[in-house]
Length: 357
Image 1 (cartoon, rainbow, N blue to C red):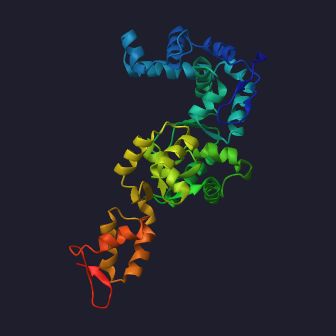
Image 2 (image 1 turned 180 degrees about the vertical axis):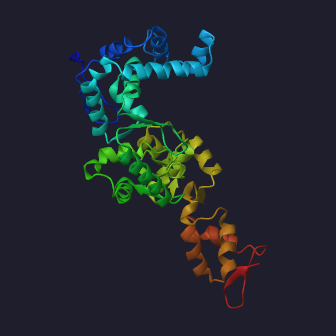
Image 3 (image 1 turned 90 degrees about the vertical axis):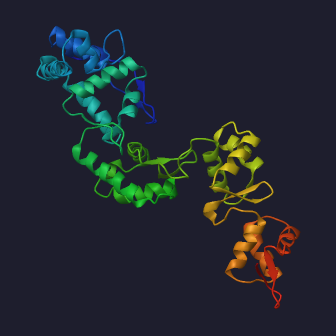
């Protein structure tokens, strides 16, 4: 029997509309008529298909009926098998094939959250599609793990290759490496050599990258390991880090605060930003209000500490020392000379050079 046409639903994260021709509510209702009353009630509660959109656990249903969790699971499994062997299921070949083709168009394997959001604008609709995915024999769900989010696929071979490519990509990244989007995509393509060329486009690769918990992008669309300092953004400190790193040179804390507002639309008060910069070891004060990144080779400390560290390597003349200090600190010559003339810490040698005392 042909199914009733339904309105088009928008797909979040897919940049296109899912044009499915069947009515998911009618299809689900038809399938549920094929099972016993108790199995129908279990499936309705488990998938949130009734008046309530809440999906109940096996334990909750068991407590309600005074039976074990395992017994509820058995009733659910038996109900699904009854549907799969029913006439209603056989009559649903076309709509389920259409749903399978849709998943394939998204790249064969899709993060569960994104897939369901693209299939339904509300939770009740998403629940119905979740039910159809479970009942359909061509859909396979991969559970959430430490490395991947929950996902659905329609082809074991492609899904396996994508998983392996993502794991290899993660292994190729260092703990601190941050790549531009184009650089990351090129490296990802190197890992996808065994995957069908038809899927190797930017939209699908982004969707595959979204499967990974260990690889992600920062707000500037730079990619790396999820825990890399240049990727994770949990507060003002992390946004400040991205701002200074993007600038590639020391910045005054007032400019850092302004850039956070401009680039990320985050409230960043100047005083708060300054306080965060002072407390974070990733930043080094290199001048009056100027902060650089420690990863650039800057060491913390006042001018006296910088002079001492430089002179520990070898004695230098006054001019040589001025040049070296000004490579790592934005200070006036007189500030350096005042510190250099403190005999408690430095001494002038007979040949005119200076050493640490």
